[in-house]
Amino acid sequence: MKNILLKHLLFTRRSSPTASQSGFTIIELMIVTLIIGILSTIGAAGWEGFTSRQRIRTVNGQVFDALRSVQSDAKLKKETRGVWFNDCTDLVNPRPLVICKYSSSTPFGDSTQVKDKSIVLDLSSEGSIKPQQVQMIAGKCKKTDTNGNCTEWEADRTIFFNYLGAIEIDNAPDKDPQDSSDRQLLPFFVTISTPEGKGRRCVVIETLLGSMRSDKGDYNATTGSGCPILP
Image (tube, rainbow, N blue to C red; front, side, top):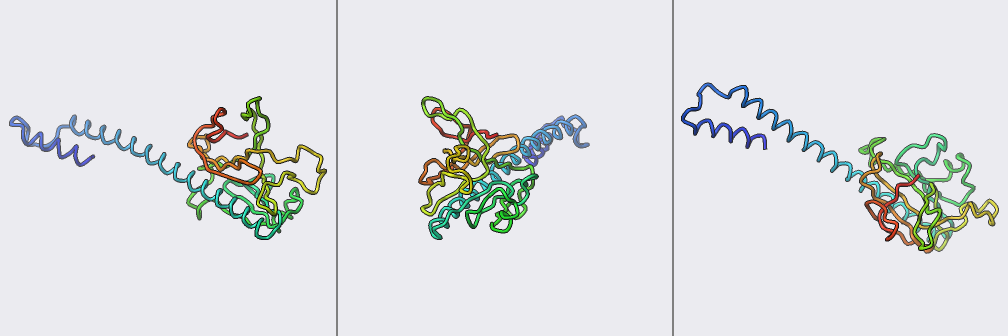
């Protein structure tokens, strides 16, 4: 585009019988510089938007693959398997873009046990995605209206698959099975977006059988499509 502008200006001056042969005027150079600056700004903004979308797609795909892998491993080994989203070793200062795949169903409140009995999966694509470029938040539907549409969300870092690959309802097998606060609610979302919540994509686990899908865009309570902004 820059070369086209310069060539057009040069051609116009050469074809004009009154054009000065001493070169471009300062006004002409200022106009061309201004146009080039505007086009560069537009191009930079477009490129940043493109790279942000690519980062979000990459992480979304990694999360989906990780969930499928844990689900398959639970069925293969005939044992409960779980996933912890974000950091799985430092529960006080979680790092972004890290998930932990539990290798066994142990009490999950002890960070030492988590560290010793898990596989950490870094979602930063070998360092190409830096901190604060993409955020990942997991959560579940906490409350629905009379039509079954979710009206309130709750942050939830963990989800478990039982030996059949279905969702483990009791999230804390070591605690009181009658404690409803430990129950896994569905749908379960893992939303990936920019730090400002834009460009959202998500992985959704919808049924007790563990069926999952990917989605994108703003959440629509009527249709249940899209990705919610989680707490």
